[in-house]
Length: 227
Ligand code: CA
Image 1 (cartoon, rainbow, N blue to C red):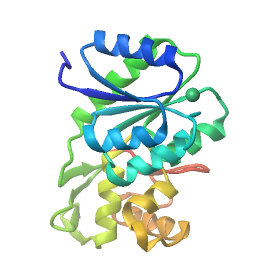
Image 2: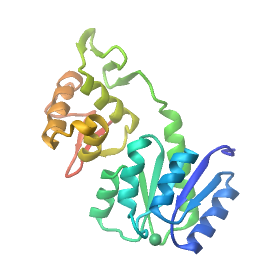
Image 3: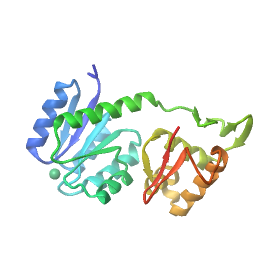
């Protein structure tokens, strides 16, 4: 049973808060709730939840802003967005802001619970690691190097942080903006910088850098690491 996991619910519609709280508690989760973004960010800092269910349309700060704020101090917490919209651009913006998944309203409580369970499983399979395999390459983050067919390539600090971030989210599309925020932070270069670093990593990792199989482009969005 997942009795020890805490879920923070940031949602302003009382009936959704009630319904989800009941369902999540029934599944064995601890639930804390906030009905606006400011309070949600505060609670995220205080309670350090395992997952956050975040409504997009909130009074004051909207869900995108809240998601970005939370990602600044907690890059690892699972964030699932609730959106009343289903346009592709909203989903992309949600992923850019750092969401792991989204559920479109109206949704069944069972669907949300299943998504959370799947995300938790995925996280458990992928603990933060210093050594991991990407295709034929063995990456060693703490040693700042990767090895391919017995040949060792050095990794720069930014390459290490970029690989670390892609690995944490492997299997997921990661937006260029999100990469910039996480890897470069205040240094804040341009999207071209991300692309250039991706090209460098492809040359080291991919069998054919022009036809990448592991660091793939997600058109109009960013990149995805496939182990
Ligand atoms: Ca709302």
